[in-house]
Every structure is written in C-alpha cells, then in structure tokens.
Length: 386
Image 1 (spheres, rainbow, N blue to C red):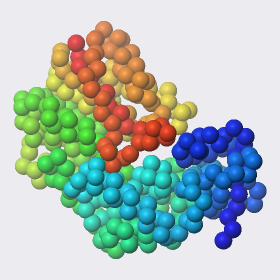
Image 2: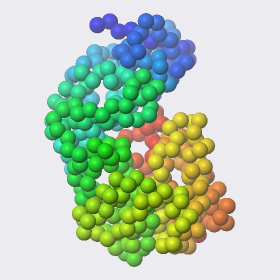
Image 3: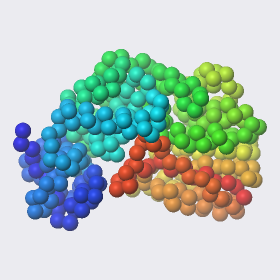
Image 4: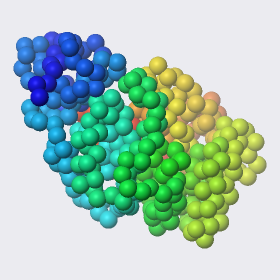
C-alpha cells in the first residue's frame, strides 16, 4: 500500500534525525493524508526521514515508528515487543510487575502496556495507534502470551486525538484485582478500577531507597499514599506509618494490603491539603509529598508550582529538625530545578533551611532517551530540614 507523505518545514528535520519522535503542530504539511493513517515523513527537499502515524487534530501531528523505510505490519510490532521484553529482563531481572511497553521511549508511540504477572493493561493514547490495533494486538499476544489484556484508555489526552475514553477486554480474561510482590511486600492491584493501570510502577526505585533509609521508630506521613506502597515500606521497617489519600477505594485496598502483610499502619481518607492544616500526630521524621499529575500542559505549569509550594509550605512545620521530606512531581512540565526552586521558596517563607540529599526518578522499565526529554517525567527531591 502506498503511504501518504507528510513534509516537514525547512529546518525542522534535524531533531527527527537526532531521534526526537514527534513533529508538532505547525512544523509540517500534508495533503490528502487521512487522520490516524500511516505515512512517510520527508524533509523539505523530499528526502525520507521516518515512517509513522499522522493526525492533523493532534498537538503531535506525526509520531515516528521507524527511521527506516520499512513495512509496518505484525512482524514489526513483534520485533518491537520482543526488544521491550529483552530490555526489561536485562534491567530488572525477575520483575514481573513492570512497564513492558513505554510508548515513544520504546518507539511504539501512543501505546503503553503494563504487566502484572500474566495480565497486561494497555493504554492507547493516539489515533494512529488506535487504528493500528489489528496489527499490534495479535503481535502482543504472540510475543507476551498473556492470560488477558485489558485496555484502559481513559486519559483526557485522547480527546484532542479525536478519541473517546474506552475500557475494553481485548484478550483472554482479566480479574478485578491481581496480587503482586514489590520490595518484599504483597500488594493487591485494582487493575480494572484503580488509578492509571492500577499501580504506580514508576515509583519502585524511590520505594526501594526509602525502605533502605527509614529506621525503626521513625514517624512517617505518606501523603497521596494511594494503595499504601511507601506507607507499608515504612511499617515493615518498624516505623510508625500514616498514609493519607482522598481516594476511598485506594484507602480501602491500602488497609487490605496492610493486613495481607501483617503490618500495622494507619490510613486516613482525607484531602491532603486540608489534612496538613489539621494534623495532630506530628512532628514527623519523614513526610512524602507525591501528588498526582496536576499539569499536563505548559499552560498549567504555574498551577502545579503553586500546588507543590502549598504542600511543602504546609508540611514543613510538621517535620522534625533533621527530618526528611520527599517532594515528587510526575509531570514533565515541572523540571527538577523548578521543583527544587518551588520547595526553596516554601522553605524561605517558613524561615527554614533545606538541604538536597538525593534525587530519584522513574525506574528503569520507564526508559528515558536523552533526545526525548519529555520521557523523563518523574522526579523526587529528597530534602533534609536544617
């Protein structure tokens, strides 16, 4: 089948040749190319650059699948998925609760697949990948041999792709919940109803380092605790652990996870911003501030910085001298430097010194190509109160 042609404007080809996976709105032109279809990307002189998907409605009008002029078929996706699995086995051997496919970072733009043992949870984020499902779905089944695949494409970003939210069983059978093991803890994952794909796999490294550093007898406040991963890591170490989240189903599962592991922890269903004003259990040795992604676009960056400032400002009086505060942002729109600067402003307003001790990022199953800075979205600043 002859593919349509998308032509880059002059001077925009360098970043594609340097492995950047997106052509943004206003950087290209296409005549007669159907939204969601495969197309060939060429430079202003007509020289081949990439094969990918095109959607005039999107902020990212062209998404690169391959910089080699090749056929995009089931074999293409089998190769991609095999490479994804091989990389994860090398980086995180034996880990079966992991991100198996990470969209542009794995050169499968618009597709995320998380694995929980025999179950796969897929998120389709682009019109092009939605249209290519008849190719990538059988390839994923053949490559991963899952017991079931559930699509949970519920993200708001689908709207600008011309897609509606969708939850659909794609293959086999997927239960409402599945049990995994992470950091020596058994965790119930609500794969059908939980946030994202049911579990925050990207925080594995932060949890691991926290579990190594927290001490018996420490008092820990885990804000936005979700199903209790960090809270229970603290409890396992012998700390006095408190978790707060506004999401009632998550708090209920956190309590079940506590019982499943024979651990004692207190979980409170509350709005974190309000809870920090009313807390009577502090001061704490550790406070973890890990809010959800409050800004997906640059236009909302200021609101995200304001939220992080407010959280840090409220938390600092509850932190013991010498205590640690881990402040996280899971939005690319807030850089590490901006995150630290926002915490600095909150500390200055509280007349408090803060020392940067550590920084953690998303774990290795969420690879971050340096030519694609948007892929490095999660950063956590470990701060000590002076």
